[in-house]
Length: 231
Image 1: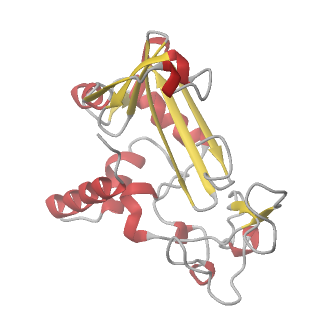
Image 2 (image 1 turned 60 degrees about the vertical axis):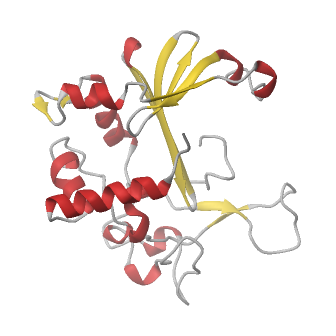
């Protein structure tokens, strides 16, 4: 097993073909709206002025594009701007490069693999739905069978010898890893855990579920996922 963004993109295309509706519409109508995730979207241009958006992973922003809060749409002030380590100049990687604001970007071509823009409060609602077997506030969004399948080990990878994974105390204490449906799976000190992390340019995020403890954790950062530990 190897995680692949291309696989997730393919699933997004399958959803569009099967439903006759865009991936964005499916996510909004079938998940976000029923869950009351009112501050979550699939498009950066819903809150950033389009003229200020870079249009691909490595694209430069358009000439004269604004960064940070100055690029937000009127009335939208509460959004974390992307940051990363200084890209220009003579400093080598690992030296004292400063953190700087990076351009906003919008990449619809990879949306199913990483286009959700959200908040801690909204993602708490997402995790509560998973902990409640697919329902939230008395409303069922996913069937209990679907949720159980998502959080079951679909692929099992026995943990390597301790010598091969001794990068941290955490790494030494999980005895099993694998993958469910959209969730990484771990057996940590005998406790089953579901997790998923990821990042976009200038951002990173990770979330963890421990169903047996009724516990969910979300960590969001507006520093590039390659430059900070949350991811």
